[in-house]
Image 1 (spheres, helix red, strand yellow):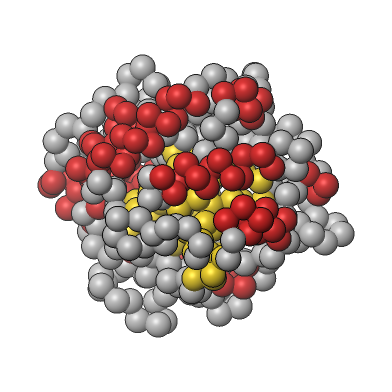
Image 2 (tube, rainbow, N blue to C red):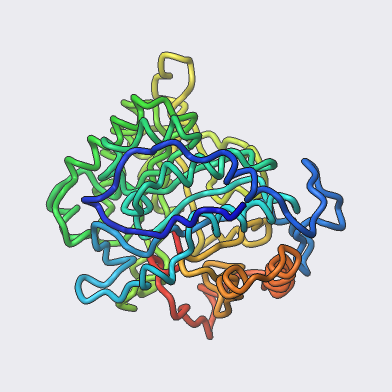
Length: 380
């Protein structure tokens, strides 16, 4: 039976809650013609790079389009987007996930652009949630469309959310995003809380001379809602290529500001070594209703890279595999998907990408070259 093809239609206006997904189609997609499926793959089947890192995480960009224009990600105007027919269909994405879940991919995160401008996204969530081996299904979003989609996404099987929140101030929001709308973001966060996701984390870019004053208010906001606030060092992935090392507000500086305001910060052991964030409990701040102390997290790709434990691969909206956010190389899957190649051939291409993975990026070293694609084209 042929599998129906869902073509992308990235449109804020046309996005709709999920309809029934054909389970026979999903079952067809889960069949791998050349692979023996197993819940736990043999060591020889797993995706292991030349440095011994076992890959368990896949980030999937479902679109390069977005409803805001953050300067650290996209150009303000005249953005060149991938043509609709060049974006992977839901069925193509599900096929790739099925193949990789058979060799150890366990965590899947949907990104963009802004993933919620991809029409009928809850349908893809439901398809992916049914694939054997996928244990964690999450999404990164700017939250603007969450009032409409939080409940449908949760019902479809999405477990966790990361929400971008750089500021609570409308003027600063406009400066960063070149658009209005902090109120819609805050409404989206509240909708996500009401929908009952297993975890919601808030992420803020830390940029010198712009976001220092945001640190304390953001932590207080997150704490008031029993959410974890995480700060990410500013990385060279902007489309306009204006990043400069002097703009990086370092993790150590953020920690100093947090200690000055909140007192003792106690490190929390990460649930897994590959987690990029390092969390801290605010020991001197009252616990929430469950007895949990408030937490803040730091992601320090510039001053304290976490490449040594990296277990991630990335699938771009137009169907290429990237083995690092800062990679200068990509391995194409789209033509293989559309020209009738077997699952084994697709897997060989992915293994080639994994085998070529470098030990780490070189942001803080001489000779670093920013990748040709910026963040919205790669996937956050």
